[in-house]
Image 1 (cartoon, rainbow over the protein chains, first blue to last red):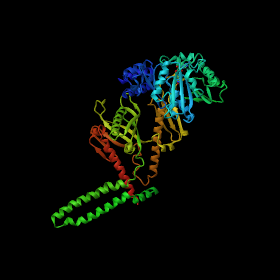
Image 2: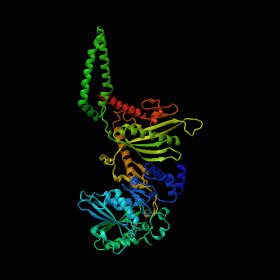
Image 3: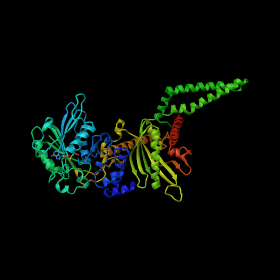
Image 4: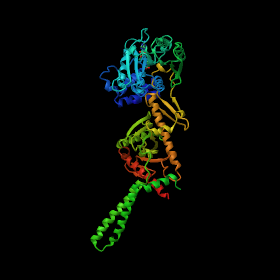
Length: 300
Length: 338
Ligand SMILES: C[S@@+](CC[C@H](N)C(=O)[O-])C[C@H]1O[C@@H](n2cnc3c(N)ncnc32)[C@H](O)[C@@H]1O
């Protein structure tokens, strides 16, 4: 049976990838992370659905009570995060720069920092930082315009044991997902204002330009939220909006750091956009594991 | 003849209290035996029979001293006794037969781990399309796992008629095993095994534009330790981060293994037998299905019950025997030193 399923997967994925993925599916079944049969998994995957939406995680059975939608998983650093369509699946490129960012800053509980993640999706960026930095050293906010993302980020925070509010008893890192449109002129509003000013702002905003969007693999365009991917005609619209936001009074604290993930051939343009605000003394471009320019880092 | 460490070690032994106690008891027993000997010829039959009993019991005590008490006191305590093990298995000659046999051995060691209350986990595995496993790495965690399993390194040979062979011809195929000491990430002595600047880390496939454009899982990594040329590829986990951790774990094990072997070889001239097992291309054991027997070629031990080895806990007998043989040879070497 396995060889027939393998053949079926290999048509869309190639031999190596197919046998690898089949093994992960078998693992998920043998560890009881899923209720799906191997047949079902292969059928869905062969139609182009991302593996990360299909494969469950060991926490799933615990959570099933309140998760009505289909749930998959994706490891992200030492975390195992839930994934759920159409929220963007965390990418290895993002995992890589966030791990590096965690190493390059060392906040401490004596002087906790305030962090904002724009377009938080699954919550992967702030949750990994909250997990890696010492307890009580960071209070993070994530905003998103998608209710699916909001719910997923909140579920992931619960799964990772990151509370929304610090307890009085012991130092803890906190994460709160808020519904907001960060393109709006009046952003940030409400509860977010109390978190101002921010010491760190991170974002992996939608950055795919129109002509690349129409050529995306189907497992991306048919399953992941267009609002998570499409960066406007040039792919750079969100960076301009973020730059305008950064310029608003009281948004950044005096030694703030901004980290922005970028797409194909965008790094230098985004670096210019960021520098043109006149706010930063120093910028860097970080490479991803495949040697591509992936993250623009700006320091004041 | 003897290296400075050996001299030191013998000195320590002489001063050791346990040895002194054993020595005293042994001399006393000897003394009693000497006293009993004349009574064996006593004219009184009751006395004679008592003497015979006493003599037998004293002799057996002395034998016990010679066979186990002294050796156990003399063999230097293992410096690796706390280590867990990483077992790398590769199929060798014999194509798919060898892969099937690898699967059998894998299950055998998993069962052995269970019996010993070690935790066995497969960390990497490449299966064959035709069934069986091309290669695998298992992590076996627990005290004494490395010391028990290290002598499993070498070539394991199977002789059987493959299920697919209609003519009933016996095939010979092999699986090679290397058992490495496992270094935990938290183990501080691991630090000095390599420096990060000697490591080249590569991701395996090209990924086009990457980032938001691609959601295919491409988590395979390869790392190279430049000074030794050791490379480790890892692709079994679904994230790069996890594969990187695994790859570093394997690298640390290989480097520690190299270091231990080097240390052993430096003492080679005095300790001739200790290097047994360092040659991993040596054929160490044959599993013969036709004759239902397993033979360990190093110690010449044959067990006539193959299924108890592959499906029961018979493998423990081999492990114990080889371990004892190793301890004996250390002892012999120590006694050769004047
Ligand atoms: C590329 S995804 C990144 C998700 C996540 N941070 C990650 O790295 O995996 C971009 C996210 O931005 C959100 N988003 C798009 N437009 C937004 C807006 N105007 N305001 C707030 N969030 C927005 C999308 O819903 C999506 O979750």
